[in-house]
Length: 362
Image (cartoon, rainbow, N blue to C red; front, side):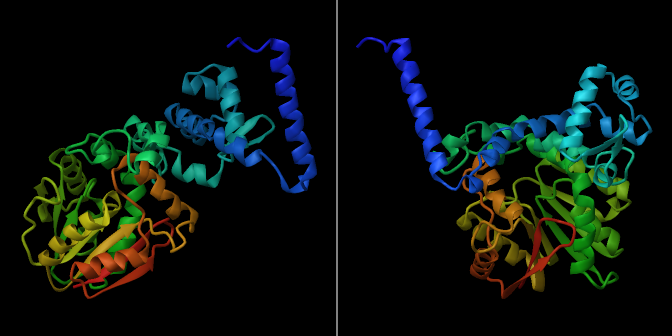
């Protein structure tokens, strides 16, 4: 079959465009807009800009008083043209402000993106934008077709996956405040003897927070051996290493022992299907003393699974990076813990975070 002549192809294209224009004009055009589509398709530009700004220490430089294109370019080692365009873009995206050709930090940028701030979180890009995470989204179509990650059979759940060392080092700054909030909310009596099991401890900050809050608390951390090295470093820095021990290996395989007052399950259950979660929770139930509690921190959507937006959207991360993970509703957590033998579960909000706390009682 011969190819279509150029003039015929052009006529077909123009006809299609005219039909589209007529369709749009037949609607109430004040209610129609392709803006959301184009913003979403171009959202990678936001990510690239903030990554470049963190890597070049733009926010830190502005915090140090370098507020002009010339001084910023010199401090950050860039061209003036490149710095001007990047900083203007960061103004457009609300990370900076600009007045009379001088740039300033917003309150949020000053708190979270200036390396000199105690609340600095810029290191999170080392995990959140790691190829080991973003590769899961490069073929999301295949993940949707399959119903789980297209990266490999196990995705980020492969034994000793290096992504979790990156997570432990990069995400710790984002965890410090929630960890302290949980310790205060869960354990009101800061003097009683307390034995805490921290499952998938990662950086260790959740267990460490209980040790800091209670001088009689002893923490046992479970994770892969290479990840636990990060946790032990943090326990040493926090001055609680004498009450911090480790159990290297898979949370599903190691022997926890028994007699725990609390078991911490922070950002862990979402990686697995319901059956696997219940298998783990039965093991947790056996390790707890009577009256003990399991403390679960998670992104928990409402029953409609589309609100609140940030918690609901987390399911897509699990689809892209795990075989069967999910963002579970509270009702699903209630059933899982009940099937594992727990008496009741309660849901609590955690101020200043996007996550919620489930406290389950044995």
